[in-house]
Length: 419
Image 1 (cartoon, rainbow, N blue to C red):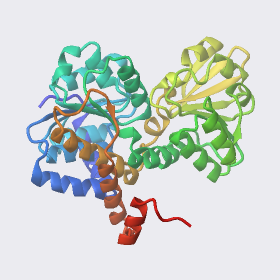
Image 2: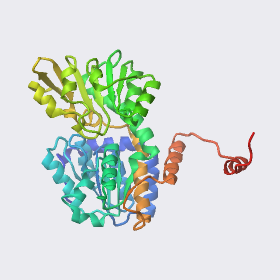
Image 3: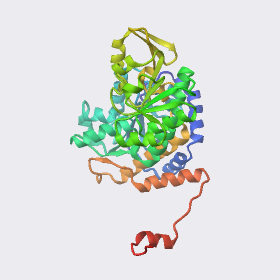
Image 4: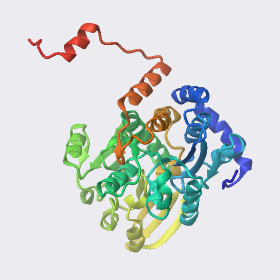
């Protein structure tokens, strides 16, 4: 088995983390147990470009239990947990190509190793693997039955490809599933982003002016958590509806040019490019802290920040770089602008990833059943899969819900009965 990880001797700690996360992923465990018997992916090559975390490890174990031959590579250079990668190789015999801190050349070498596996199903978090299959490795695209996309940024890229007529195989927008974005993006990103910022800076949220760029589900989650810790939260938006919602949720809403002058902590969560630009950095107060929790670091204009700076001091604290501007103001950039929740912390809690990865696993089974029948397009997750995951999660939490009576079902299906 070929692999590329930093050190196999890290495997014991990685295994402990994987099994600890598994304790909090009962839905995925139930699917793994069923997959072990039914083998819905028997003999199929599967490649996944995802954050290599303990939670992802349990998804990989589930796919392998279903009969798949699995290869993993990282979807972000700083998100790999090296001990988890080592354990997957040594203890679970799953090939991994990922090293925390890998440079761009190694990052793409690892993506190409995943393509060399000749997958028929792919999993992506940011669409870098799919993009490679549509550009430098497009001759390999014909084998793909379908791909699953995990994050907002990736879905944005894939819908753009589909709209331009460039998409070569079906893609399932797992990110858009209610069992993903309502929980993973809102509660997972909200909590883990705060966790990453505090670990990196020892920053006290209470009383601080925190600027949240973007009020999608991730932005909502962070704004909610920051306010809960006593922060004064400011939201910036380009969408009038989301801006109105943020205002009615009780947050201050203003353009970034205005927020830049008053904010103390800035976090981008948009899926877009250059959300905080040179003119914003120039306007910031001394010792402003800047982080990104969107998938790619392009949300921050880091080249623009460098041009404004007369000096850059790396690692003044772990995951903190100090940019000293020409006017001697200091800007603290966290985790090189990479995903703060994964680079400086451990990513989402296992209990919320349980739903996202359960949906991923069930989607893999679904696309095998639908092989050759799915149009080349970006597809939503079927509602029956959403319901199945939700019911399994509720059951694991010992929560019961009501059922419609026969009378209620009849009433909902009719139009004759009124006041």
